[in-house]
Length: 131
Image 1 (cartoon, rainbow, N blue to C red):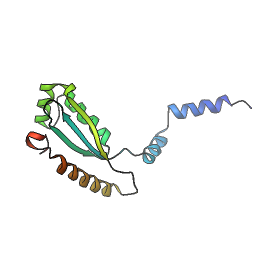
Image 2: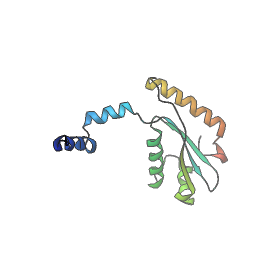
Image 3: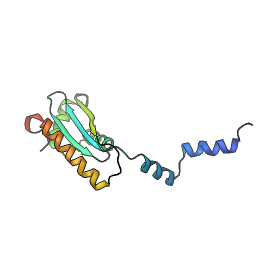
């Protein structure tokens, strides 16, 4: 009743080298979280608030843009260059529950959630980098 070495090798291959269709299925079964992110300049307390259907991916992209000096928000980029990466916190502050809603409905919910956070934090002018 030993295990079949061929089948376990196939199982291992599927775990380490999934097919394109398996990756698509896994993505659909576990879509990335939609939510709200905040980038905080701890040196002066200013924040940038944003949203994304793949909030972790957007936050990672924001961090990479700052590191490469190519962020689209010139005030944030200037402060990042001035104070250094160690003075910035990157965090997800809210996420939408996964549901059976359409992407358009999820986007609408995400926009409403962002508006609530913008109203709460008021990240404008001296308080933040949002416009």
